[in-house]
Image (cartoon, rainbow, N blue to C red; front, side, top):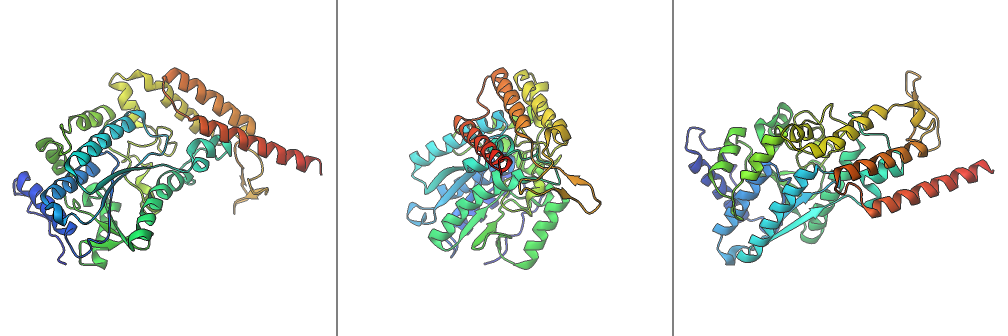
Length: 378
């Protein structure tokens, strides 16, 4: 299998786009067609171009040769930016409708964290401190585990799976180094995934620039119907950028950095939520309470009056310099956070926490209080 070579950047975008679609078609029909494709779809510009190319390639394949199943898989952390998740819901519904009418071997799926690993259950229920760059517990539980689980299930069913990603070499220096590393290891279109045995990665738009991506989206209508105009508007309002599909800890630095601004509205890893602030600046003032709540979560993280002295393992812990490492938020602080969240939810006018999460949070508190009472009576 020969490695795909990027089209000459001087060629018209229509020719380069057709080359990408043909490349995707050829790979779809390759000897690995017994293995399903898992297309990571965040709803952002890069993953939309990849889904667009896959859709066009499938339409170009004769029905008798559409043997490989394809999954368009998006992830909902349950704390996604409301505008972004609304866009994702709309687009995936359009794709699903088009797939049904065209009879394509394509499944639209959505992954979510398990209830006991949701952001609110961990933060408010168990008292995990607000995530930061040193303790980013959210990425693994909200993003990596749900989607990796979906991939592993397909590997179990088929022996292997191919993850199709909108990774581009020019996204960042780190991304370029990662792409180069894996391309140097194999001279084919597929590279073994860094942390999921049996999974391979296919990057069909790796050599496109950001300008190329926007030109393609602006030049060719969405194959599932309509145009990509709403995506353009979303980026204009939010000042651009999306939190990418993250499938391993190696890729985690792409989540919660200044370069990825679409993501969880609760993200306390970034210094400032530029996407939500962009929506507010463009006139969507109902999002202001969400920004204020996020900023407050950052402010209270290291407040010693809101943190337990001991860790969840029952130990009093110090780092190598002798500095005390505090434990989780106290139950009083967790109640304060929940009360404030429910107030923000009322001001916002949309659901921010589910009834199932609320029920599990109160059960977690009750269990913890019972344990503390038992220890006090020993």
